[in-house]
Amino acid sequence: MTVNFVATLGLALGLAGGLAGSSIGTARAASAGLAVLAEEPGYFRQVIILAALPMTQTFYGLIFTLLGITAVLPSIPTLTDIKGWAFLGIGIAVFLAEFVSAWMQGVVCMSGIIEIPKTKGGIWVHTMILASYVELFGILGLVFGYLMLTLVAGLTI
Image (cartoon, rainbow, N blue to C red; front, side, top):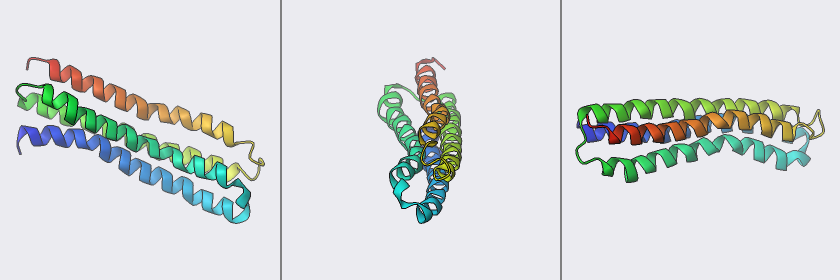
């Protein structure tokens, strides 16, 4: 394995975490949504929005990967082994942040979707707010990951 491969793999892991976590989170929320819509089709708008929320971590992972590949990696004159492996470590951290954030956001959205008919739609806004708390960890994963990439890129190691 070359150092470029290791660094690029690390950058790609950010996207992979977002894709995997979003798939699981969206599937959980959408599955609950199907059960609710079978009984109460009038809640389609609320269900579709809540079921789609875990998809955002895929975009955060994509942004991390694209920024790393197009902006950070090319700015390094010589990619050392230490920097390459550091990129892999950062990518693993971003993978975990996006994966867990999307998965758990799907769980929050699923719980809210289940309660929509019982509350006649009243829980919808509350679920959006609570799901945004979990969303924050995906955003922080992107921001801290990118900051760490730029920090490592600027080091003389």
